[in-house]
Amino acid sequence: MTAGAPQRVAAAAAHFGRDLHHSLDRVGVIIAAARKAGAGLLVLPHAVLGGYLADLRSPDPDALPPALAPDALEIRRVIAMAKDMVVCLGYTERFAGQRYNSAVCLSGDGVLGRYRKVHQPPGEALVYAAGERLAAFDTPAGRLGLLIDYDKTFPEAARALALDGARIVACLSAWPASITGRAERLTHDRQSRLFDLYDCARAAENQIVWVSSNQTGTTGGLRFLGQSKVVGPGGDVLARTWAKGGLAVAELDVEGEIERARLVLHHLRERRPELYREQVAGPA
Image (cartoon, rainbow, N blue to C red; front, top):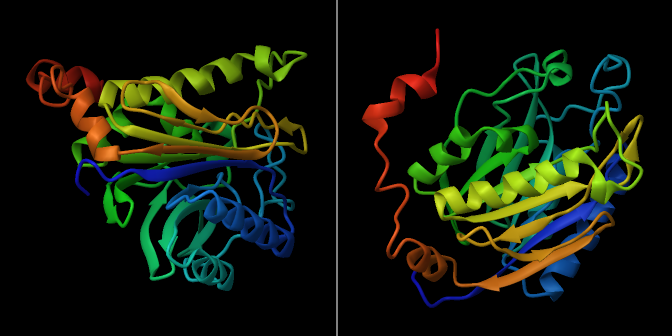
């Protein structure tokens, strides 16, 4: 894409549970709303198809989200719904006898890119295998990278995608309020603050556009934060939702905004990796 071509980008906040038929109906409604708003890119939350875990500390193996094959009928149905829109969504993937927290980016032309969550909190590691690859890919909306909730805690993940040329990072979440120190109001919750902090920091430090989606509502003992947003390459929030469902829609010239952000200070070019490569890798 070239500077001077504005596009509309949308991040959704919504609740998705175990019922796949209901989830697909809701996806259709959100895609229709994003299309009406003129969005060319829509980022849906993680666990759109089948919901998320109900308990992060001791997941019930008999009550896990349904696991879908990479070419499942449900994904093909979203491809048909997307038409000329680029749509990102998360689901539980079944592949080679393993479960993965996965995300897929697609349009009416088919699958554009896939990702398996690399970083896992302890509860997830009991039932999901970890992904092993961070890579950007080309889409009609621009070169894009995918991350899933906890990944945003690790600066290296977003940096790897930016170094691979990602202009937009779509971070899909099923991010709950604090489990151990829950606040009475979601806006005062520690995880609420961290969720926003990571979104803005990852955008600013890499000088990219960051599109953050999240679930809302509750599943089991988890209460999801919402707070979906579009963040510009300077770390400024261009559009956002709050705790309830909705669409955050921002119109921006992605390439132009990135060029302006990097005009004087170009963070990726000015790195000194020879000085901190070993420290970033850490002990074996």
